Length: 163
Image 1 (cartoon, rainbow, N blue to C red):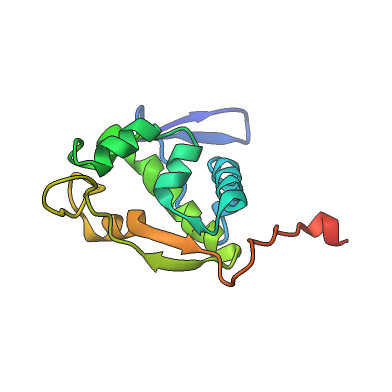
Image 2: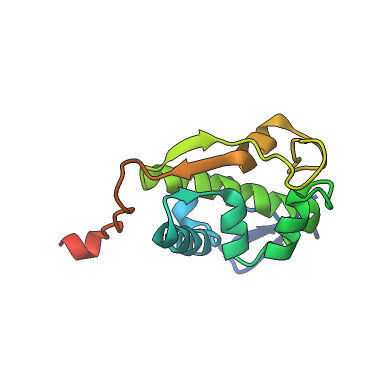
């Protein structure tokens, strides 16, 4: 239940009840205004300086939300699902994946589905990203973004630089 109170003679302020705050939905028009966008953009730029493929797990490592050791443990099958070792709540993680998708589209990176299989000895097993196994989320985590062409990724030009 939302609380309403009078701020002044003309302004009425509405605040969600305690613990019920929500970020607005991330869309293709609003994703650049999200507080996570600058961190995602920096992480993607860092990854593209080294190679031509941007993977969500690499973005999480670059942002400091996932330790490289935990990623390796997951790939070796020591962790049942990746979300267990990511230092971020699930709604924020979902927003991050959407922002990454929109940003990759803006950079004209080509999406490519990838299946993660367990490393090491023993039977080949498909790795899980989520506890629930939701196919949409599993696909979002496994979607890599590839720079088209043979050369290195061209640095994005800013509007200020072109004017």
